[in-house]
Image 1 (cartoon, rainbow, N blue to C red):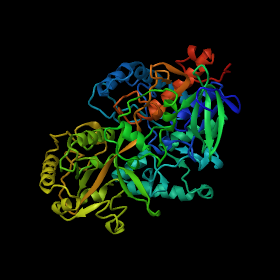
Image 2 (image 1 turned 135 degrees about the vertical axis):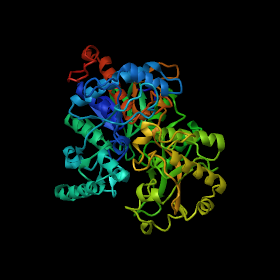
Image 3 (image 1 turned 30 degrees about the vertical axis):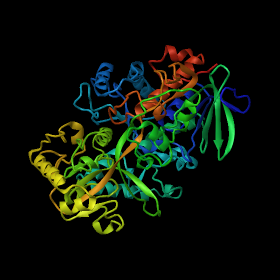
Image 4 (image 1 turned 45 degrees about the vertical axis):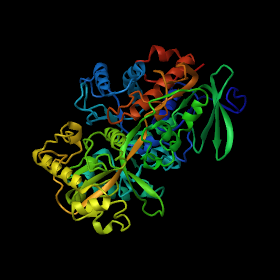
Length: 592
C-alpha cells in the first residue's frame, strides 16, 4: 500500500512501536500502563536494541532519588546551556529536564529498581555540573524473563564480560579495569559463581546475571511481558501508512520477506535507533564520514530505515552532522576467520604512560576527556590537518602490563607470547625504541620524540599546560592513583614501546528526526505529523552537539518515549494524564 492511502485490513493495535531498545521499551511500557494495546516490532533476531549492549546508564538531572541533594531544574539548564554549542529547540530541552524525573518515578513505580552512580558530568568545570546525575539499574536475574526468552535478549559485547563469558557489574568492571586491590579475588568469585549455577548452564552459556545495559532492558522487558505487550522479532518496518487527512494510519511490515500491514489506531512511535551503519547516510551528513565498521554498536544494526521511511512522508531532520563519538580499535575476531571485532578505547587513551598523536606526531586533545569530546577533537583535527582518523595511541611497557589498549588486553591477561603473530605490525605495533616504532608506523620520529619528551616533563610536574590532562574530576576518575602527582600522566620511558591505531567510532548518531517537546515528528514546515512520534537515536538529540554526561543517550531516549506515550494517551481522551501528569505513576485506565 502506498503512502496516501489508509490501512483497511489486517491487524490493529492502539500503538505500534518500532524498535525494542530503551526508548521503544519505555514508550510501550507507559502505553500499556495507560490501558493501550501495544505491539513492539524489531528487525533484529533478538530484543533489547543497542541499549542492551550498552552501559545502561541514564542521565537524569534533579532526580532526587535520595531526597533533595541540591540539584534543580535551574542548575541542570545552567549546565546544559554552558555545554551545548549549537542552537537547539529550547522547549524540547526544557521538556527533557522537566519530564526526565517524572519518567524515572514512573519506571520505579513499575517495579524496576534504580540507583544513582557517583559519575561526574563530562564537563565537570562548567557551571551547574554535578557528579550524581547518572542512574543505573542493579544486576537483574535474566531467567526471570523465562527460559524461552532469557537467551533472546541481545547479549552484551565481550568488553562487558570477563574472558568474554562472565558478566560484570560496574563495580566489578572498575576493579578489574584498574587492577585495584583484591581484583583477583573479584575475578575468582565471578568465575566461581558462574560455574556453580548448574541449572542455568543447562539452558544457555549466557550468564544469568544481566548487568549494565542488560540489567536495564531485562528489568523493563519483564514488566512489558507481565503486561502482555506483544513483541515481534525479525520484523522490519517497510513503510509508514498515511490516511487521506495526512495522519499516520499504520505500518507496512516484513518478516523473512513476507509483507503485511498493521493498523495503528492511536499512533506509531519510531524508536529504531540511528543510521550509523548506513554508509550513504554517513556520507550525506558527516563532515568526516568515517566507516560504518568503526561503529561500536551491533554490526549492521542501525541503518536508518525508520528515518528514511519518515522522510518519505515529509518528516524533517536536524543535528545530523555528528555521532555519539567514541574511540575504537579493530582486531581479528577470535575463532572466526575473516571477521573483525570493534573494541572501545574510551578510557584507555587517557591512562598514564601513554600519549595520543595525529599522523604529524602531535597531540590534539586532552586524551582523558569524555569520549565524545575526544571524537569531536579527532574530527576537527582531521578537518584542520588532514592527518587524523585514525590517530595513534603510543604507550610503554608499564602501560602494557596494567591496561588494555582497545582489544589488546594487559599482559596479566594476554602476555606477549599469547598475542597472535599476525597482530604484530598490522593491528598492534611494538619496538624496542621510539625511533623504530615510528619507522613501523610511518610517524615523524623527531616530532614524536619531542611530544613524548614533553609528556614526560608533564608527568614529573603533574601539570599538562597544553590540554590540562588529569586536571579535572572526570579525567581523574579513570586515571591510576598509583601514578603521582597526576593519575593520568606517567613517563613513557620503559621499553618495549607500542602503538595502536585509533578510529573515530561511535555509540550511535546524534541527529535524526526533528521532534517537538511532545516527541511528535515535525514536517518541513515545522508542523507535527499526526500520529507519528520518535524517541532515542531515531530522533535528534535535545542536546545538539553535546554529550553532557554518562547516560545522555539513554536518559533522553526513555524520557521522550515516556512523553510520546503520554501525548498519545492525552489525544485519545485520557484525562488522567493531563490532570495527574506530575505524579506519573501510570495507573491503568481505559483509552476510548
